[in-house]
Image (cartoon, rainbow, N blue to C red; front, side):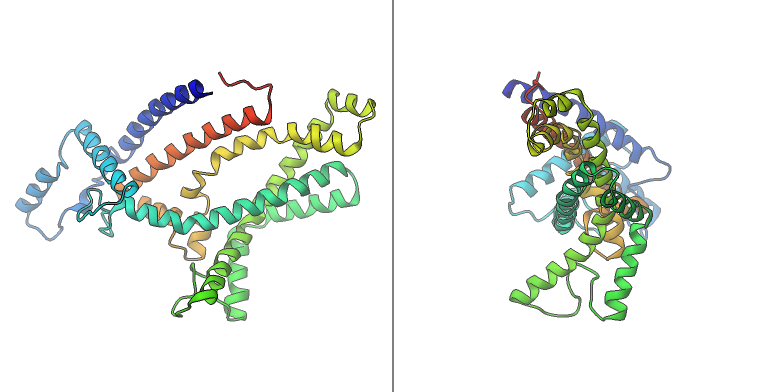
Length: 331
């Protein structure tokens, strides 16, 4: 196990190195000057040329790459191990804020929304999907199928706008932003206010995921129930619950372990639509705005951290595979 993890970490390091080069080239070699935002637009041409020279904006691509990631890991070390820091090396072109501390702050804003949506989707999808698979062809199964396709057909952003209109416009109950704006709340009232503002977009955002995941769980369960070893177990007289929940469910759940790899990087884009609609100053919205405004340091830092989290998620899912199925050996 230890040898396997070490070998995978080395492979992840090589993969991340290649990704860092490709993502850096994607931003730097794009048309235009992604670093122009760091220059003073009111300066005379001679001063602008001096700023470009001292800032290294005209350096070779390799030098820019080494400088950027040298600054990135220097700032990352300060974020991980907080120390007295008066000047950060990676600064946003537009907001002039330090990139990595802002990324950490935005991630903490997005995290409750992603966690709540994920818990709702995974908690409801499995029992509903299994219930539907075990009652295939019945009225209950058909009702669940119709509801699932209905939720899939409804655009999530449209449903979110309807909720905002119903609560905020019609009832006067605020649901936009992480907390009620313009009101000073303390203690339990502040806690319940923040919980309410997280719950609304989290629940609405989970509808589409529940619908899709329920259909997927049902399909996987039906596929496993049709296997020869399940029919053999039934023929030997094993009780219904033991066959369905001990043998069938365990094997049917294996493909879903793969989806765990996407949970960590979902912080960077999974909730961008609902963050925009509900005015959440989160990570996905921040990254999207940086792409539109060509804020190079933010884009490159997000691409690198998102890639790293994806590789970590894949490693975790591979380790869980060996736990869920003893037949899978790590090697």
